[in-house]
Image (cartoon, rainbow, N blue to C red; front, top):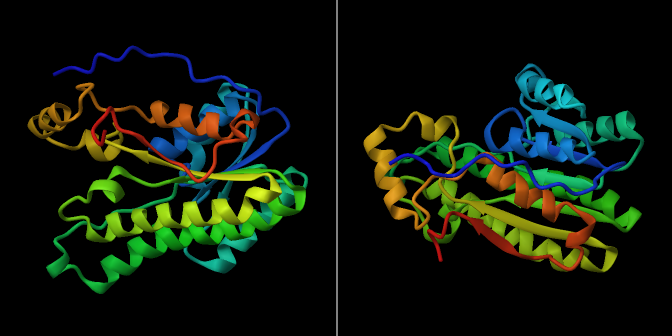
Length: 259
């Protein structure tokens, strides 16, 4: 079954003068978010494991007339995270208004056969990395009494997924973390929300056999996979000044799969 969605321009809001830090910005959903925020006027600090990994994202942003710089970090290492936040402050003038915690990995396997490293690596990247960047940037946002934190979770956290005990647990942790810090930061003008993508067309899903992709689409009421831009549009709204009364929410972008 072919996807029937027609391409559309991204959501447009005014983010001029704002700095957005996006982790896992080298490809897929992270790249789409970084490009869309830049189109709306934000200066984007894209974080990946290597600066070279950010080349395609930087090219897309700059060709569209946006501003972006690459920063390298292991998101699960405190020293790396703190260094990058300091570098972003120095490069863009001392303030970060938007944080998108998108960095994530999978190391799938049935939990009875799962090695400790597979569990630890996924939890550390997906959950600890979200905590470390939110802590570092959240302190700055509290001082400036404004900020938008958007954490990328997954429908796997809402429904579970066989073979992804580590991934589902990490993303469920992101949900609990989001709701908690939303309460802690609300009085300082900082909102915290999470987006839970469903089946999205990325490098990972592109490699699936056509039969599997057809079966997946049958499970989705709108009968298609989502696009990274579907996620980027929602993130852009949540990052905007207009989303000031929306916090502590977990929003599934899944074509109705979990409705």
